[in-house]
Every structure is written in C-alpha cells, then in structure tokens.
Length: 296
Image 1 (cartoon, rainbow, N blue to C red):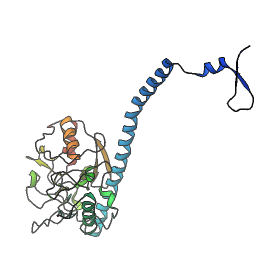
Image 2: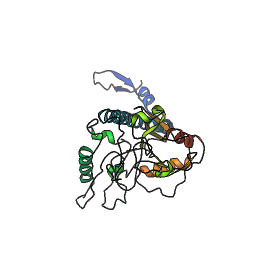
Image 3: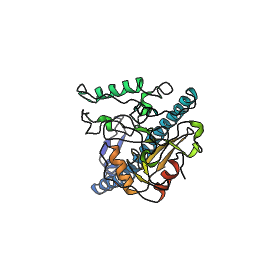
C-alpha cells in the first residue's frame, strides 16, 4: 500500500508520494530555466533601451516644436523680426545663451546643482525672448541631457548646464558682415527664401556651462564649410532640428567622428580638437539646411 500525503488545503484529501516527487525540479531543469531567462533578458535589454531613447527623442522633438511656435509668435509681434542675438548697430550682445536668452549669472553662491538651476530658471524667466510665448522652463531642456546632475563650478569646467538648444547662426546671429564666412544672416522672417528647409534651432551643448552664442559652422566661399561645435547627441545617435517654418524633425547622424564628438559634448566635455566629415550624408544635410543670404 502506497504512503499517502495530506493535501495542501488540509481538507483531508490524500496525495500519493509519487505525485509529490513529480512536482519537484531537478538541478538540470533549474539551470536550463535560468539560462533561458538570461537569454530572454539579454534580448529584452536592447529593446527597452531603444524604446527609452525613442521616448526621449519624441519629448525632445515636442520641445523643438514649441520653440518653433514661439519663434514665429515673436516675429508676428515684432514687425517680422527674427530674434537677434546681438544689436546690429552697436554689436552689443543681447542674448548670449543659445542666441535667444540671457543665460545664468555664475557666482560663489552656486554651492550645488539646485542653486545653479534656480539661477538658470531666473534667467529663462526674466531674460528670454521666447518666454512670453513659451513659459514652461522644462521645454528648454532635453530630458536626455543629464549635465544638470553634475555639481556646478564657477569656472564652468565640469560642463554643468540645463539648457539643451541653441539658435543656429544663419538666423539672427551676430551682426558682422562676414561672421564665420556666411556674411549676413537672415533678420526678417519674410526674407527666408526656403523656411521649410532652413535650420533655426539645434540641440547643442557648450562645455562653458550654458550654450554661449549661436551654433555655427565656418563657411568658405559659400561652396562648403568646416565644422566648429558638433551637435549634441542625447538619445541614441539622433538629434532634433528646428526649422524656420516652425516644424522640427529628428536627424540620425551616421559619421562616427561626429557621433563621438556629439556624445562627448552631450556630457559637457570640450570638443575643440574634433574634425567632422567633409562629405557624405551628414555633411550634405547641414550644407542644405544651414541657409543664409547668398547661400548657393
């Protein structure tokens, strides 16, 4: 007669010992299960990471669209003028940070990142051409930009920053006749001959603590350019770009040198010795989008 085991409910039901033995896993079976789970996890991690980057990119793109709307509303209220970084008559710098706001004032009171953020928030609220039209401070920050988590320093050498976007120099930049080889910049919305394909904003990261000045490339003879600062890259190898008609798009960079420099800049590291592509898809993308008066 087989030995019997009382059921788990304690209700008197009896189960044979042979049934209990069938419910146990062997060591081999457990190892197989662990290996299968490990393989599935390894397959899942890249998918989760990709989904996270896509979510960040989508949020960043939405920021660019809101800034594009502010760009147009400003022009409508200011006689068709494009937000200018500098006074065209005196050369006085009006908006040194990203080419459209005043930037923070560094000082010894910056004991931590919270103090630094309060200074940046004050600058965005009180010295920002777009703030009347776009008053959500978080719109000026890409959620993938983690530089604000670092401890700030008054010499700016650690790359702390919060703002993630810069105006492009071809629209309303410095008032020089031949600045970075492009001569004049567009100053009126109506003067832009191809607004749907003309850059206006780009993700950028300046190691000096905020985006000092506009984002530019150095033109020579109107027929080509050399890179200056790389675009910042915070979500995979993709960067958001704003255009003069108010729309924005995501561009996936392909050149390895540009990508490495973009990731480095995104962490607040100076990229003064990098060299970008002199031809190829990324070069042509910037060549076509960086429109300015006299552009071929």
